[in-house]
Length: 329
Ligand code: NAD
Ligand code: UDP
Image 1 (cartoon, rainbow, N blue to C red):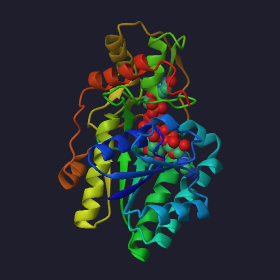
Image 2 (image 1 turned 90 degrees about the vertical axis):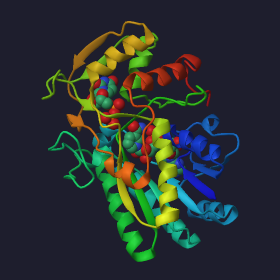
Image 3 (image 1 turned 60 degrees about the horizontal axis):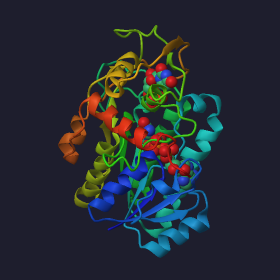
Image 4 (image 1 turned 135 degrees about the horizontal axis):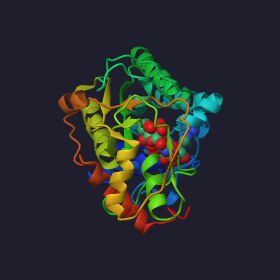
């Protein structure tokens, strides 16, 4: 099968490309490299540099590569930035995905796996969130992803484009080979920031608020290994092929860790001290986000392999030690 991976030079995208190639898929990556890294793309994948919003470019990609299905990672994903610059998020996350769906419709490609997020839930009213719980995003980033989920539902009804939207909780860790990992610029995610502090690349970690109603006052998140996420995309593709049915699935480990617990675990993994300072809450942050992934386990047959925070941080640290400055491009 020929799989088009949009945003395949990004963090989760490049790990998914590795798993796809490992399982014998033919992979075509589209990425504008605004955030991604050319060198993160597997040598057996074909990289087409361009933007989802460029109709002519996308028509050529579909025409020349006989695409069977699409996996779409291409988006902006910084919660704080989305609060300050909502237009930028609607433009790249909603409009660009609309352009991708239009190109799919022109090319008669009817299957898509879409990167959604736990941010669609907002501040949950339950400890463990299921797919049919309340949806009320607290930031524009989550709102744009929810808008696309709804757009996908209508595209299915109107054009028969079948979709699987995967609501990831907190992606973390790196490929076990240490060849690819997380390198965002600017880095805003907790685990890479904590590891940069452990490696002496940052003076300290700022903890965004210790006055949340949690056991230690800091936010709880469900960290899920990036290779486990990557494999869920393959399960989703298989389901689209075999059941031809749209669906929405959470992906997480089902266990929450506070910001302080992540820092303590990183101290153990790295053997270094990590200085911290409490500062104000970050706007738009819900206090607790933990997944129930029962639906994905039952319907997709997915099961995360990295189910301890220690293992997840170890793979991230391995990448960090091998690539202290991230990618070269
Ligand atoms: P990333 O920024 O590393 O990757 C996104 C890639 O898409 C980048 O390579 C970027 O250059 C490319 N891109 C963006 N807009 C594009 C466009 N218009 N045309 C072509 N290419 C474009 O992000 P990531 O951390 O790998 O996240 C991947 C997806 O998963 C995103 O949609 C994100 O919202 C979602 N997600 C991420 C997390 C997480 O913890 N990282 C959690 C939940 C959901
Ligand atoms: N966080 C923090 N300091 C940082 C980065 C993140 O305290 O330098 C907190 C953030 O407020 C959130 C958690 O760590 O509660 C995870 O944040 P991240 O940005 O990694 O992922 P998000 O949950 O926003 O997708």
